[in-house]
Length: 253
Image 1: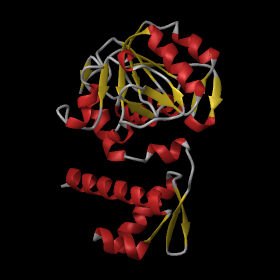
Image 2: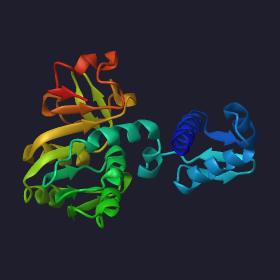
Image 3: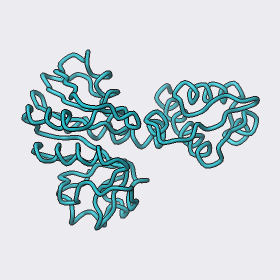
Image 4: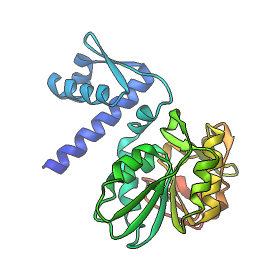
């Protein structure tokens, strides 16, 4: 019951975030009626959004905090990101060396990385580092570099040079957008440069994205489709929405 209750809560909150993003505000009374829950439950949901920096309180409800901040994006498509994280867990081997980028999807994955066996992890993501730095069975390294506030990450020549000190087996990354014929794209050139540097020193590149990013385009071209060894989404691997990528990447999960 607890697990089912948690899933119901997650799905309701994701639907609320979608409505908050599109409409800009939510009222307690209207939300309680629409989602069929008590007003106190809605208020707890609203407190959850406020505490995570994606909304602020107003009389009778909340309004969205607009922008492209890490905190705001972290809670978009939350159920999909949780499903992706569960898939990624099976790709981490004992005594391996892995890299994590600074994306919100990979940050969720980092939160779930427990029961590790002598795994070395290097990341440029500050939230991922803080989630993992005291984790038993993990040797965690944070790259140096210049802070990029938008992505709560470290970027630049120092961050990229740090990658060369590790024998990285698998790099786990996400991206702002992914499309057939265009590959991955980002909203900052610093993220493009870091991910290209990561691809150059890693044996395997795992791209983890929720399906809302498929066939979309951001500002700057990043990795090509053939740079990706494994594409991981929340979808079933037989979903037709993944058909355009089957011949372009080595595997889909």
